[in-house]
Image 1 (cartoon, rainbow, N blue to C red):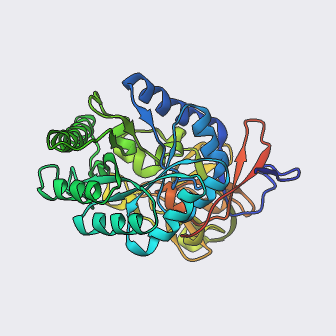
Image 2 (tube, rainbow, N blue to C red):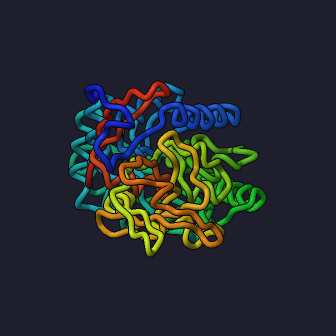
Length: 383
């Protein structure tokens, strides 16, 4: 449950703090939901980005159906908050099956995934031993990015057979086009989105042709969800970082800087005048060590520095970070007396490279309205 922070505003909050621009967040939620609805698919957001019930409730209120989680702890916490339709989108291992069983026995419609015949057999054996019919989805590798079975691999049918013979329910096939994070043009994004769609649909077609029931086809990443021209054959889409966006997504080309809803509030605490530095109280413990933009066309250092009202500070870069200290300096070609420009006590907002990683550094969010009022929203920790 959200709790009000008494009399707090962006000008009075203790820093550093993770803050959410609610207007931007809601706009991002509506944009994605409207697109999925127009393409005729169910949308199941990946809530690992926020790990926050109020954020997830806003996604569901906009039309999302069910959620995706990356840990069973997330599943337990969201189930306790009243959300029952949950996909655990990480390959199931035997020692986590008791946790999955407990959730299902409590009424959670938990779905689990596998990408090997051995894992499928373990799930089936555990399910039979405990009188449980797990709903299992088969993970498909459509781009060589991470885990999953290739759409044409013979093991796809072996996995389905192990599940069916063991009395489990095959929920469908799912994939994640992680390689979409490596491109930055509309044509390339559209091509990866189609590759993702076609590969997963083909895997489902193979299963059906072999006599298996395969009702679901689930695809998704934020870049492909926002770039797909057709989702024929797909039943649901999953995406997560879209709710906040971040600098990696900006570099990929799916959001503007003024659409990034998460930032870190920080205060200038000192200067090194001879070096042209301003020191802030947000180091990598507040921003995370994620330097995801370093390999992209534009390197944002540890984040994009903005004014308190969210305007980008052109020419000022977040160039270095220690545990509790961040260093701001002028970019090449810009000559500003940074100590005069950003005196001690100046409050700034820093847009993150990777919203998931930055959010993970904080125990709560401070969500603010246009009128400056701040509400504290809890965030889940750990595994």
